[in-house]
Length: 291
Figure 1 (cartoon, rainbow, N blue to C red):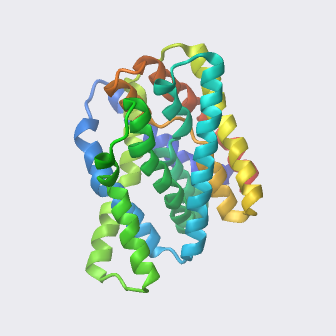
Figure 2: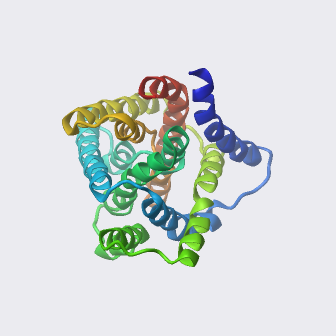
Figure 3: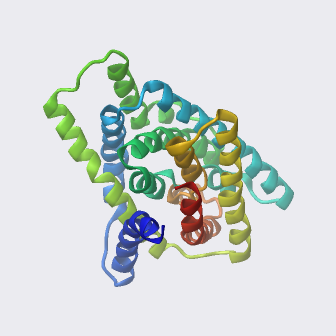
């Protein structure tokens, strides 16, 4: 079991550690330049490629997607209640408590723990989270909703193309499949490197509050995930994927939103760092249970 956990966690920790050490050593890695490549090219290609390569039926992928929708809604409700009780600003912290790191960490763990099948199911979950980041997350942070931003989300079109081709049994031309697959393959390594880079740049603020909200994000997410696994009757790989993704720490994207809209960015940064460190400590136990 220890070696199994090492095989899954070591690549995640090492690659994020490389990004962290690279930045702390004084070298530069411009996330502002490379992040658009990941958002607009890498992750849509990863989504399309993973869905087209998987032998999983559309029904299984759709089930995971709907479960992801339910979990995010419950996480938002839980987060709203906690923030109201603690009298904390909703615009600053609700996206952080609702939208976990299902990309940088989540997809990596799904791949290393469950292989290509796990990656495909993880992509179905991540897609919902990514869509909500660019709609719900931005809307709460900005205190307004933008249809233009919603329809510009590239993941929508990657999903639509993959579903259409799977539904109609249309084969992907080899040259298209190879190109999209190659473009998608750089996404997970780059996301892990940038996770480390981001953690190295962030400054922790309000540690006590960050610890409390991190417990809500990780512990609450896991509890909600367990509830939906039971309600949906999931088991095996599908249950494992849902529990991994539901219990991920706060996504770095939430800090970028807080910084852009000036919603307590230092405190959100602290929440990102503390929840990620907490997740590093709890992940071995979670994986030991679900594997």
